[in-house]
Length: 216
Image (cartoon, rainbow, N blue to C red; front, side, top):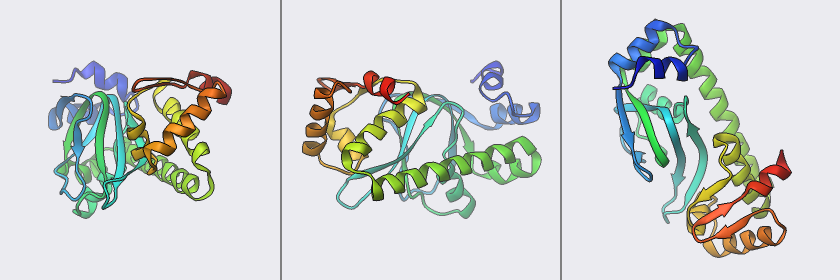
């Protein structure tokens, strides 16, 4: 059971009635790393609102390659899943935890009810949709106009903006999946970045603090 004070701290802009509804009508759950919360092609029965942790939202093609769309951090909701809930359609994305994550799962029926009951919920959903739309545009633009080395740098700086983290714990293959590239290409570009002093590489670990210092 999530504490009311935790919800109030995470969502100070929610009206009191909405916070009570979130606690009383939602289900609090904790998930380990690499847990799939939403699968592609499933009907969504409840949507997650992140309390703590980090979730990646991505698409997978027929060959199993992933395309990272955006991250969900504490206080955020997956608006693609909200749209599927509204339309009662199957999910077009999958959502996977990137670190230990706690969420409140809200039944799909509550989405429409809360939009009419709570003004702050309506404002929250609309703001989330605008934010996700902007991020998806950035993803499309990076794929269309940026070289892979630029996309790789953006992958790390976006992660820093989303989480504040300066270290990536994971394999080169996982980064390649996220950028819809190959492990060989990503490994070669990471070595180039290391020679430039932008990252420090070790087994399943990329320290990109110098890149963040350069970008900010």
